[in-house]
Amino acid sequence: MNTSTKSRQLIVISPTAPPGICGVSDYSFLTTQKIAQFYESVGIGVADMPKLSNEATFKALKVSHWQQILQEASSRSGPTDVLIHYTPTAYAQSGLSIRLIKALSRFKKANGENRLFIFFHELWSNSFQMRFHQIARNQLAKWSSHQLGELADGISVVTTGQKKDLEAVLGHTRVRLGLVGANIVPIDKDAGFRSQRQAGLWALFGLAHTRLWALQAHLPMIKRLHQTGYLHHIQAIGPADNAYGQQEAAFAQAHFGKGFLRQLGALSAEGVSAHLLEVEAAVVKQDADSLYKSGSFAALAAHGVAVICHAPTTLVNPPGGGLFQPAEVAANPGLLSSEEGNLRRTVLHDWFLSSRSWEAIGEDISRWMA
Image 1: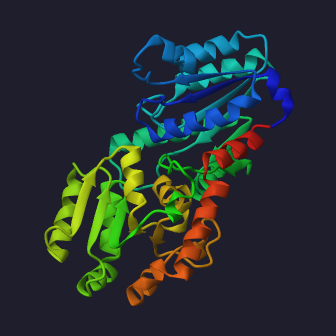
Image 2: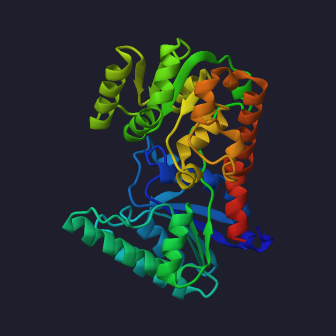
Image 3: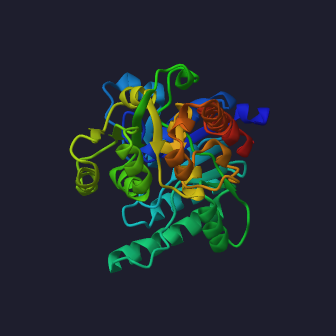
């Protein structure tokens, strides 16, 4: 980042802040810690104030409501950079972020050196299967994204689909692809290659609906390996107290019997990490675009887990050569723990360190805002 930013203030705006639970806010807070060194001072503005145990913690984090911190920035004599981590309903449930748009417009007018950067983590939906109120909110979200994009000095998204959609609305191609990290990483970055992994113990990691889809998509492979006695159990790591969790359990019991699927539920980050360091492999159902932006996939890579997925071997980002095809694992499950298997896990792990670790993401954001 340009050393001239040392004389600038940074304001980061996000839905909430730790210990508030929100993936986008976790991303915001972790990357803020990496780029704070380049600024004179840093403040965090939130839409939903987290419940912290004491006032001293608030002051240490410099957390306040986004309206307050933007108003203060607009009256400040020195130049300020604002970085917003944006989702359509984080700052207005209706999707119409008019108060935010007006506040940012005042901020830009207050000082010609003020700059605005927007990281769109989500955009409007392109689905045709929506109810009337969803259609209305979707259009408001699209309009708001357009207005925010017009004000921004820099725009980032997380998928090629979002890049295409936003560029079409804005009429230019100055939208960049940002990097997505993992909220769950091992304490030691190389722990996944020293841990004792259990042969025949696999994982499904993420939200219940994505786990169910993966279980359904890879049923032939899973059934074959279970019948041959190779695959003993699958651990479902993530929330299970909803309809999809019930469907996941019922589907597994119908095809494999009771006890094959172990639903562990929502665990602490330490608990998730411990399980990801012991499983032999994980099964996912995602396409190339969703793999790129998936935090759960990045967590698997961070822990050195062998990832089984239908993805082109020619895929570059993430590297298709670091993944395992279901057909080859079904034919030769020993591949997972072979020398070739360890090489693939290393390829995926190196990809994580170079482009998905918080250090790498912080550097990427710093270059973007230089």
